[in-house]
Length: 281
Image (cartoon, rainbow, N blue to C red; front, side, top):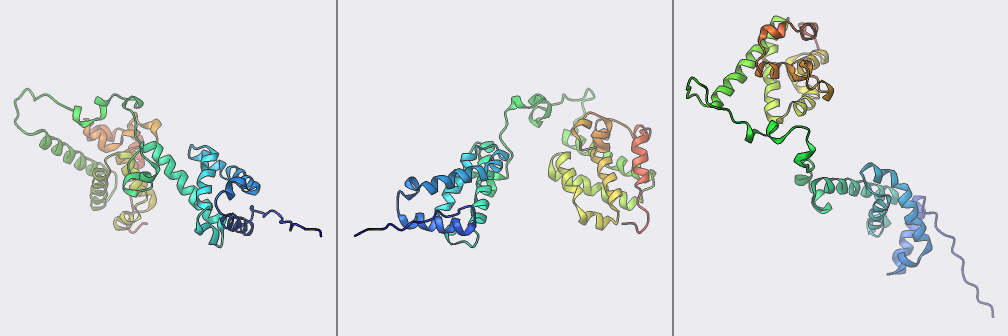
């Protein structure tokens, strides 16, 4: 009597149907199936190649992405999904992002997945900055008392200086053709956003997409962009040390006068050309 062994054609795991069939077979085979099955080994090599670019994008090794894919493939969600590869790809992408955030935050991947932790910026060494700590940290910003012996608190003087800078900025825009109510409302809105953001770059990126403020002020995109660039400075790091990069508010705070700003031909031209007309959007 001759015994014939049924020949099973290997599943085409590059397609969703084949992957589902392979995952179900490995699951039904019990423990050790992933270690001994040759098709499973080919599947992991294929996964490392498939997600290699995604892994490198997040600073990881392709086999780290393949490991994440392996963890997902053993779940019921991947075996029962209409599109198993779609489930695996989505999970690998999330894991790669969490791995990158975990390395940057110096914490575990599990913690990096939590929104209240991933919201923080990456850890950085003090030596990684171009400027010394004393140049930018407020704890080291100490000024000696003025010779006149004024007892006015430093916070009050800073507030007065900021208020004066805002009023001078409003006067500059008004002199260059902006309606007073639009100039005041727009500049005060920018200053409030700057106080919340904590940095000019963050405030600029937030305000650049603030369509609600544009609608309330009734100004078009050109006028709004000119207002932000004039007040906060050009966002490019290459312009950071220039007058265009500092912006009106910083220039006024560090001692420049309104008369000096009016002698800046490029600034005057940008503000006057962008002055909103009545009813413009």
